[in-house]
Image 1: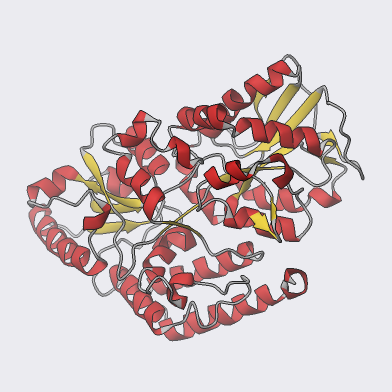
Image 2: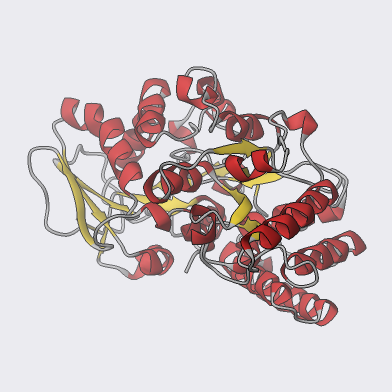
Length: 448
């Protein structure tokens, strides 16, 4: 299961499979038939495979409506269960039917491209378009000079906090990126608040922080790696996290700086006990957590749903030496054996054109995927969005870019979880690095 799923699953309502939405006057039963060649003729019907995330579906419907209507194309939009998402895409080359357009996880795009699963789409985007797409979304979508699909929005991460609890202890977190706390500063603040709250409550069911979206201890690669990478200078291997060709983590994931950060992370869960060893974020909603590192859709949607009366705020992501926040989000892509790559690509290009990219973002209340829109959407300056938006503009980087993202992500995430539960750090990191090296070596022949 892809780890990016964790930050979305809190907001999913209803079933996880089957028909999600239908756009246009009619719809097909099933997906488009796969062909050995792609036709340039305008199709009367098209299909899409989406993830079961309501606001993304609604935003996509709105963004594609003009193209579908003006071209008199009917569009059937289906979803796949989260657990089946990655393997469904990987199976496209062997399938007799494939969708015309798919939602793919940004960090996984290089792997799909390297395995000849997706069609390159760069000829359908101008240099101005590619230059306007946010920098955290394009590296993973580029393989051997070809561009494989634009993002539907951009993610971000920051330190969400329970304002009522912090006010009680006289703590006012910074809201400007230039004034962000270091991890050492935040640690001292959390230790003080946690001790006082536990004493006042008469139990130990209160913690300083929750790291990540909820499904993985230590925040998985998406969040936990922010902590590690921030302990290196910008030109360091610690900050880079992976080799330039995306095939090696030895000397990157196991530097002295990285090891120091792993010890800090382990102490959060063990020696300091500042984070619960639980995979649920409900503690924050129940006023049992002071701080929470998460992203805007999970924070805003989750709090609105689970704790609508909570008084809360957002502060910049903490760091050790260099501020860094890993981003990227869902992308639009086309299977290489789609029935009409040209028309699928035209649809996608239209969906992320200036006005439609704005509609796509507004319907999701998300950070848009175009730089030019960051100052055009008023809700991005809301007190609960501004820090997230500023972070994307100044600190955002993609997660480690590699054609072996799936293998890397699963191993690294497990390593972080093991560290959080008290495993021997040296042995755990050494074993994970060796495992990742072996898995990424399989791609040497196609990287070139």
